[in-house]
Picture (cartoon, helix red, strand yellow):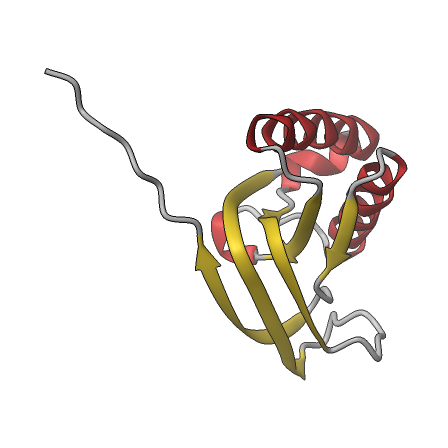
Length: 133
């Protein structure tokens, strides 16, 4: 599983069109403020042990959230992070598993629908650093 995480002031998406593997949902638009966006992609290798993938991702995400002092995430399926995609069925089960696992840790979780074309707007946190000489 590949995750690109972005600490965001806000994230908004709107699902515009289904693909042939789209999950059934009436929830086609959402927004979250002060969160970490998890652009998530399931790879072929992840099909061997989905439970381990979910546990490992949960641990990594919780560590990141702890460092950032954030308790909210948006899981955003994003197939563009790999050239070796896992099957849609396994991918959706892993994403739902991650959603459930984080929820059990009292993290507020939104998950954008799987298998839909979506438009989105993200306002990432500005990172400021000083260089000492």
